[in-house]
Length: 383
Image (cartoon, rainbow, N blue to C red; front, side, top):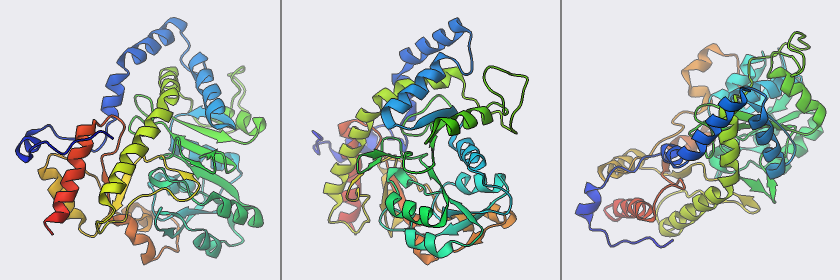
């Protein structure tokens, strides 16, 4: 990578803090492009379902395939996919224990019951065996989550889904750019739901998202659901009970620009992760390596660590921020005391709560990558 380990310790300690996330750097680097898009939107005077949204959806189709529909967030995308998939009151939907709460909240929003099952090491994605054991006559759908940017075992999950006639909704919030056997995340199931929140691997200035589905007819329904159940050509007739979930033109234009840049960013994330993996291979850590056939998106470089608080404190003393993204599995979140759910998760999933995410975003300099690397090595050299 061209990194160097010649920076004296006292100088490293005086250097500026390396943030845990780098999206503020990304946005600042695109200032000119963002201003240009804003000018285009203002000049056109079209603020929803305009040329920027059309450009984004066409670019998503070209990059990943399927039939994309832009929306306001991955949470909203999950709700829309559940509704379009016919999931409703009394149905059960299988979700993994390790995920952002919105995965299960979306299930609850449509009146269905989240069924929480174990995840499997080393990827912490939904375990197909746990999924199969949780299927009942009420099971209607499954939501595999591509955690930290590594895809779940979609061939096995799809095989089970076909056997039991389940709707497959991929939660790809963390997986733009990830692939399995060359096939993009979000194109394996009936619906693929993406987050383009500013803090993700690519995103707008705030919240944004998209759904990729398998047919034009499904896409037309989803698009109407984003517009209060109306078509874009008739604002007075509501064909479905929809939502106010249309993506604004400014964010659509920014996401389209970033989609063009994403392959290079994912390449850089993989280069940083490969460097860490080589340097940390002899340390007592679980390292996030891509499994056979997978291209990891590395939204997070999450290491399994038994001394997580101590390592985090050590990094902080070196002006390096690290984050524990999911310190709780879903059933341990206080909100679930008031949400009907079924919990099949066991101690097996608790390893997900012992992950520390090191900075690994493409805006890091080589010197910063080496500062992080050396700080981790120094911590274990002292043990």
